[in-house]
View 1 (cartoon, rainbow, N blue to C red):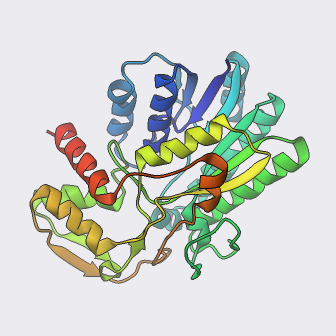
View 2 (cartoon, helix red, strand yellow):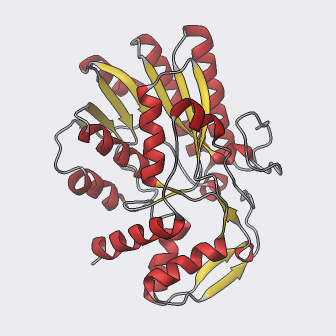
Amino acid sequence: MGTTLVTGGAGFIGSHTSKRLLESGESIVCVDDFNDYYDPRIKEDRISKFLGDYTFPVHRISICDFEGLKKIFKKYKIDRVCHLAARAGVRASINDPFSYQEVNIQGTLNLLELSKDNDISNFVFASSSSVYGGNRKVPFSENDPVDSPVSVYAATKKSSELLAHVYHNLYKLNVTGLRFFTVYGPFGRPDMAYYKFTKKILSGEPIDVYNHGKHQRDFTYIDDIIDGVIQSLEKPHDYEIFNLGNSQTVELEYFISVIEKELGIEAKRNLLPLQPGDVVKTYADITKANKMLGFNPKTSVELGIKNFINWYKDYYK
């Protein structure tokens, strides 16, 4: 059995993917630069606490370091690549476009080139629901045009899909791209809205609610997302893109009410207009993922938030 390289292995989805692989007896190599886009402490804790029962190599380098990555590919018998490292966040990408171009495009190109050179059997990578931009047709289907991104982040993710297609076309690299829809859960990203809401509600601070709470999101629990990632790793495809979402839309105002209920505290709301780069509604058509991967999300928003709040209270004591 070969080894799976997990990029962004100290990240939210990366650490959960790593745990699932390690639990099943797989060998992994983790690559992560532990950057300070959000508090690096939680990245350290994902490795030392969440994954602390397992022994595996962790390389603290950027995916922009081609020579460093090359040494990793040479050192280990890497068979599969699970590329989850990225600069994330729609709004931040508007303020810092060059970092997003460097990591999300150049970093992905580095990994594709090394995968080609090392006969990688399966290359699975994270795309995003943000590629659908201002698409008004719902639910979003993989067949929909994605040529009108509304943020730099979205444009970099679309670029990654195009680069991956080139490497499949030229070198027959097996490639699967996964368009994630608003992933949440324990050990999540502190920059995400649900995490910020929880922190501020507990401290008595008002929460910023954009678009007056009229956003609708396809909130997808982390365990369901990992099911789709593992299914993609285990079943190589020539070149496929899949939506991974809960395939239900939840209005932001209701989502907040679920958090309030679990905390037993009513939030003070600071109602604000729609932000640049934001889309009003996301909604995944998962027919293709269900048929080809067996993807079948099971976790309700109510249960997912309950699990997150229980983890949050324990983690932050």
